[in-house]
Amino acid sequence: MYLLAPGHHAAKKRILDLLTASPQDMTHADYALPTQPALPRLREIRIPTLILVGDADIPDVHAHAGAIEAGIPGSKRVIIPETGHLMYLEKPEEFSRAVITFIDSNGP
Image (cartoon, rainbow, N blue to C red):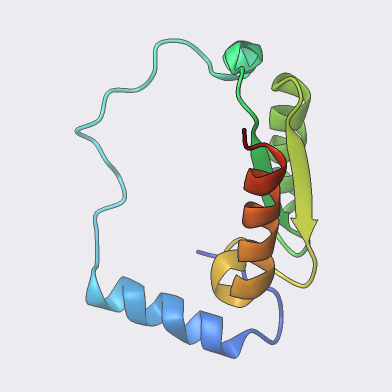
């Protein structure tokens, strides 16, 4: 279900261990669906926004990230090389560096 870039065996084992330890029902039938689509409302977001995508993630995720970036004024998209959807497990140092750099550059 989760796409990882090739060669991240430790990340694959970690996610398998996490999902095995805490199996969940991912259908969420008890949650109400939003009544308004989010895409046209993205322009309402007025805070610095970081969008992270792994370069090996599926094309739909890249398309969604691009739409989100286009919709949120001043947002920034960063593509983490050699990672898939779970870049924080595949390359935790690069993930942390991207997040901390973004926070530092948008602080008071």
